[in-house]
Amino acid sequence: YNLQSHLSSNLIAIKKPVFPFNKFPNQNVFLSPEMKSTGEVIGFDRHLGSAFAKAEAASGQSLPVVGNVFISVNDSDKLTAIPIARDFKEIGFNIIATEGTSQLLNDNGVQVNSIFKVGEGRPNIVDSIKNGEIQLVINTPLGAQSRFDEYEIGKSAIRHKVPVITTISGAQAAVRGIRNTKSNSIKYVSLQEIFG
Image (tube, rainbow, N blue to C red; front, side, top):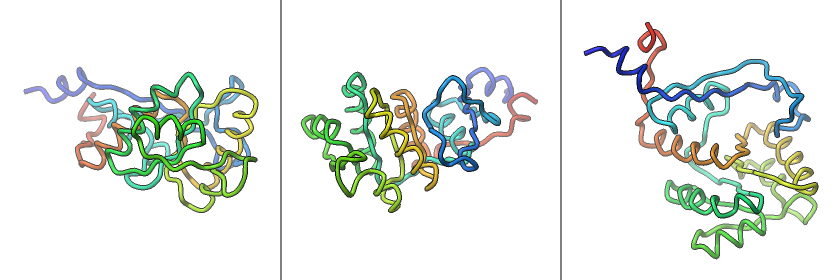
């Protein structure tokens, strides 16, 4: 039995750029063309979620296994956010969402607590991040007001070391990674064992 051949032929690799946000906490976490990473990490696994979780951990942003997930998505992502929110509830998370996302999720059978956007009132999402009440942020913004919100959310998340996911595909992979982490099914193998 050839372990090396078996492992390397069935691997998924998730590459994650590492940005120096901890050194520049006022920078925007939502990527723009001029941003440059200071390095990259890769998570290898035969399962997408496990590879994603490994890449997150390697970048210093381990995915949480309990707590509250904040979800705010743009209109084009709302329908795909429903099963993601259901999955987070299924694995034991509470969902907190902005008004529009909250109404959609509640209308589709996912119990969600609503929270103010920045500037809508207090306490708002940034207050909750600062108070340690949010363990994961899923935010796919669109539009001028959303850009302001994303900047404030991102800045607060960096300062308080809360992982931020800005795409639906990332959120889907995160759910799978958290599920695998909670079930202790993630296996770690050295690169020498894989590619030796």
